[in-house]
Length: 400
Ligand code: ATP
Ligand code: MG
Image 1 (spheres, rainbow, N blue to C red):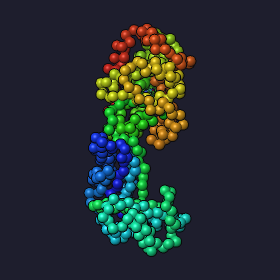
Image 2: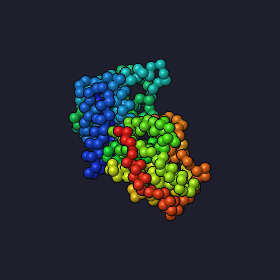
Image 3: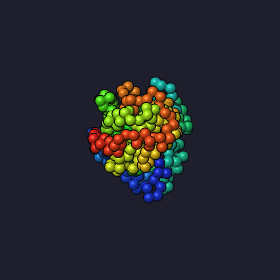
Image 4: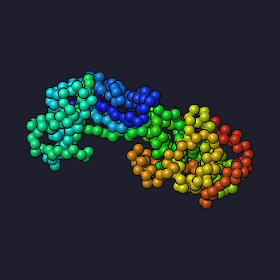
């Protein structure tokens, strides 16, 4: 029944010089994602829309289901509709629309009378009928074909069945479904960043939000083998894999922080440990970001969540480095974050309990407001602090 999928995106994001880059990026991402489906498609952009078409003929129903599922994760898409592409001719539009409508109505047989509406748009001003005329023509013809009593007219947005018709200069379109895309900007339309990814609930959501704004991300995770088990890293690998379904590919850098944590344990005040770990994590992440040309770091910090996320400690942690740190969750509640984690399919993986690097030698009563000069004084007690971090960076494993 369908011979194209029409993809819509937001005009606002495409103003001025950005437009071409934005559209090209979106088309490239759609093409790339469609490669996982075993069916040859053409992807083109025509006047503010992206079109997916089979090389010939129609889409098989099961292929269309797969395409719809792939498009649901493509940032930059506002909505999309499987559609029938046809000529600019009212007889043709009417005949095809009625055939298609009959099939759609058949699915409602035996249920409550569906509420139905037609929404027509006409950008072709030479077409003899106005949008209103087209709508009346189709409703009347449908009542003639399947009977007046089969449906009720409902012009609101929550009608059960909406028949969409667009009449353009070179072709017209008929569709029934409008699926919501995830919105945002196409991944790749902003620079690459590096996300500090733990096994928790927050950092995968933070990574997703930044990808949604157009930045592809690599990942860096800290473990403390042999004080944490291999499962600590396996869990993060699993989460990174899910996150990579929203972008081309992000690498995972795996860092063993244990030597540093031992040095802190042996040399520094116990209550400072959490802040000192975090400062070292940021410093290591900054070194990797510079090496890999990532333009910012991303964390899942939420203000006030734990001792390391008081305003005072976030400030002291932040001052360890120079690079921009994006904290997209800073103002969100845990329940809001959990809702997103469910939607993006990371929640289940994050809920598996495994030991976390931060809990190794963790103080029972961490300081909630460490001034930056105190942190510097504690760090000065660690012999060869920078060499120790450099050694840790040299030993980083990459899961490509
Ligand atoms: P999440 O790790 O998802 O935030 P959490 O609440 O357990 O859950 P926090 O202790 O709040 O984590 O850490 C705040 C942020 O610091 C994390 O969101 C993450 O960006 C970073 N972080 C913490 N631990 C690690 C780790 N082991 N590896 C990489 N990043 C980490
Ligand atoms: Mg957190």
